[in-house]
Image (tube, rainbow, N blue to C red; front, side, top):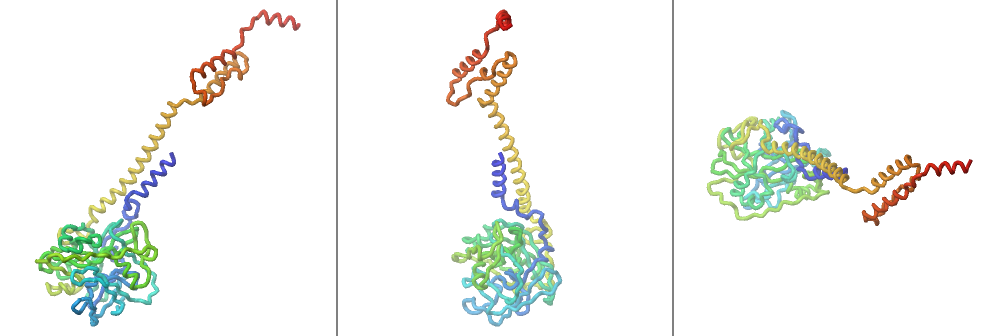
Length: 450
C-alpha cells in the first residue's frame, strides 16, 4: 500500500504542469511598482535618449536591437563612426540619477547575419563597464516554455537625462499568430523564434500615437527574466500614428551563443526546470530561414528608436513620458489583472493537487476493500488446523484423553483431495474416543488391589 501511495505522489509531482509547483501564484505583485524596482538600461545616442531597451547581461554588457544603431554604406550594415553611444543604467530607484557608461565603437558587436531590410537576426551585443568586478546576476529566459506573467516594459529618463521616470508596464497579451504570419514571411516559417502581439502605449509622439513596448519580461523558475526585445513592427497603413500595429519581439535566448562568443564568458539563463549557464548547458543558436519578403503594399515596416521616428508626426512629449492609462486595440488597463491566462494557472494549481489527494484516498479505500473481500473468500489451512486444536482441547477436558490422539494429520500441500482428508480426520477422531467403562469392572479391579 505504501508503494502505491508513493508512486501516485511521485506521478503528481513529476507530471503536473510546472505552474502548479512553481512559486508564481501570489508570490509577488507584478505591476509598475515592481518593474520600477528592477535593474535595467536604455541606449542613449548622441546625447538623446531612445526607446531602445538594453537587455542586461550582468552589469557590464547587454543586448540591444541592431536597428537601434546608426549604419552607413550601401549594405546598411556598417556602423556610423560619427554616432556616440552610452548605456544609462537604472538601479531600481525612481527619480534616481542614472549610472552612465560610454560604449566604444569597438565594443559594439552586430550579429553578422543582421538584415537591415527585413530585420532578421536583429541583435547587437554591447560591452561597457568592462573592468567591473560586480557579480550581480541577471537572467536571460528561454522561450515560452514554463513562463508566466509575460509583461511589457518601457523605461525612460526625464528630459534633462538626470533622473529616471517610473517604468511603464503593460499586461500580457495573446499572440496574434495568423495576423503576424500574414505580414512577415520570416515570422511565418520561424514563429517559434518570435513573440508577436499588438500591445502599445501612447506617449512618445503624443496621445494620438501608438508606440510598442521595448522589452518583454516574464517569470520563469522563480526568477524574473528578460524574455524578448522589441525588433520591429508592421503598421497596417501609412500613418506612423496608426493604431493598427503588429509588433515582433525576438527571443533573447537565441542570441546567448553569439553573446558568449563575443564576450568570451559564460552567461546565466533559465529553463523551465532550472537555472543554468551557457557553460553547463550550451543554448541553441538562432537559425532563421529568410524567404521572399511579404507584400507590404499599403503597409509600413518600422523599428528602432521611436523618439526619432515619431517626433515630427505630432507634438512630441518633451518632458517625462507619462504613464499610459490604456493600451490600444482593445487592450486591458495597465492597472488590471493579468487576464484569463493567470486565472487558468491558478485554477490548474488548485484543481490538480486536490484531484491527486482524492485519487490517493480512493486507491487506499479500494485496496482495503479488496483485501477484506479476498480474506473472506480464501481457504486458510492453518486457521482450520488451529480450530481443530481448540476442539481437541475441549475433548481433553471432557474425557481426560491425550490431546495428541485427537489431532488430525498436519495439512500437506500434496494432500489436496478434500474427501480423503475428511476421512482421515473422521477416523482419527473415532479412534481417539475410548470404549465406555463398565462400573463393575472398576469395582472388581479395586477389590483385587485391596
